[in-house]
Image 1 (tube, protein in one colour):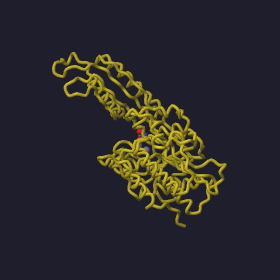
Image 2 (cartoon, rainbow, N blue to C red):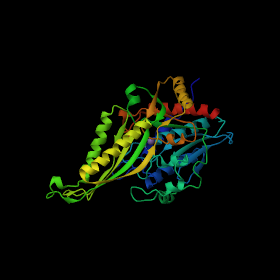
Image 3 (tube, rainbow, N blue to C red):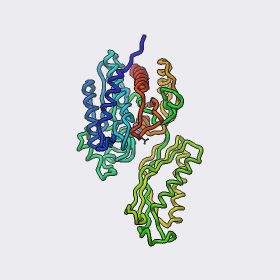
Length: 411
Ligand code: HGY
Ligand code: MN
Ligand code: MN
């Protein structure tokens, strides 16, 4: 008997359609949390939820839920699918959106096939997974899982000086429901790998068993502005140079460590930012990650020690603000086995792997058995408009999600 399959054209067509929402004047995809572009993407997703005749609920942090109850025992906890539709700057079209639209696709496929689930099913689009405009990342799912009070999250000030709660009100997604209103029986998130492993090994399905720890910091170095031409090198308090030393310290340490540790300085700004003025201030971010909590702590301690030495050596003042800190997460073994089992039954190879990226699943894992399914990323590229996954891989991943969810919904 041919196994049930999702509607490939509908899924890939919607991915392309949503992928056009939130393009800026240069054609870049910039759908930052709670922006007008995010609103437009949310509105399109909500329209598809209504078309699918799902119950629509929005919670106070703007998480959107489409819930399918027909015939199910509504006393039972639902199987939850989902991801996010907010993006980074100049993003690809698959990160997050693939998991949200595949979750909806799975529900629509099961409905059309006359499947009567023993328990309800729901698909969620979580607010502000990327954390680019408001930190921390995975904010909507973190609030949903009880890791951050919603009142505190709503007061978050963005990189543009906006306030998250006011922005959610403005775009019409400050919902009434308390975050955490629905306790999932299980959560499964389908996502592009965003790394090179699956493509390099020619494996179509990743059974994600764990996710690495994340540490985000904002560092401010205060020196002295002075004349670029008249100030001798020995008399400078150059915040720009000190910042550059931190960047090379982090990179050299991570590259030479021979561990999975990764370190990234993604944002940096100088003041007064003038060609002939020695920077008085440098503000930059540090993203440290490692699957091992002990090593991640050691990396944070090494950076702190280096900053203390640097402050003395460069005669500058250095302050640090923690923006996000999440420990590594181990996903639910049973669901990981279901993913491998589903792949085997469809004749697909699968590989157990660690997620290098953060995902909403790491937050929902705090309140329900959770796991993730990866599909290959072309060239391992993501957070980049060249992000791509072939349709055949997108469909294969969605069918594995379909099979896993069918098993979970029937129990
Ligand atoms: O930062 C991350 O790993 C995710 O894309 N928010
Ligand atoms: Mn993502
Ligand atoms: Mn991302």
